[in-house]
Length: 346
Ligand code: MRU
Image (cartoon, rainbow, N blue to C red):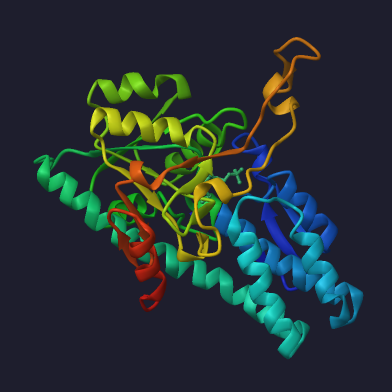
């Protein structure tokens, strides 16, 4: 798998995802300002990867300040980098508690441990999701034919420290000899689907077909999709899930065409303190992401733009939420609470 991030001993090395797929460039992040900027500009992106990166950002800030007294300031600052992915706040809170009790070295040890933990969690999501995909394959008598998945945005290896969330069942199945085909929504405006998901599926030899977001309905209407799997940036206590803008439309289409719609995410993406999707803060991004395309102005100068980076899919449109601790089918407040109480599988 392509490496998203790695600790060098003095810096966090990040794959610059803004340059994919044309250039593979790694940047070394050595302080909290660079980390804030990398998260805000999507150099590192995807909820689990942002969380791990922020944990290292806290360490770098405290290390450079030379005193643990800087802990609250550094944490508060990094928490302003992006608002929606709850993994950011989850990771910052986690290392903050450890830093208060045990100091800067313990923050670094925890951040390093989070890389391995993320791999383990994602493989467990993969196992739970693969069981669902296998049952779809059985039901549809697909034995020997590839199961056709559709995904939106990037919740593959590059959204995480490795292996991904929504694509984890696909990667695990691929390892175990199952056959999949993945339709990849390009995901305007920042093209995480075409730039990142198509790239990593190709690099991992998983058959994939790229489509424009506008083609999803046609592809589903033609019976070409057996299941949709997407990731999440924050899941509310009632199972409503925020994910990349456009996901809600895909969920509505899936319901219309009778296609199962799965959300795969670690339990660190569940925010028990956020009651419903209406309470999830949605990041608004720069108008230029919409008015420009591939570096060229494509809209009239001065046009009004609305550019929310995420939308919320209500739990009622989600068939199951797949986590490392189990699956919530159908997702609702009771099932989510049960999941959070169940023992960790990693
Ligand atoms: O803005 P991004 O690229 O950080 O968006 C996050 C995402 O990649 C998606 O919403 C993803 O499906 C969830 S992150 C596992």
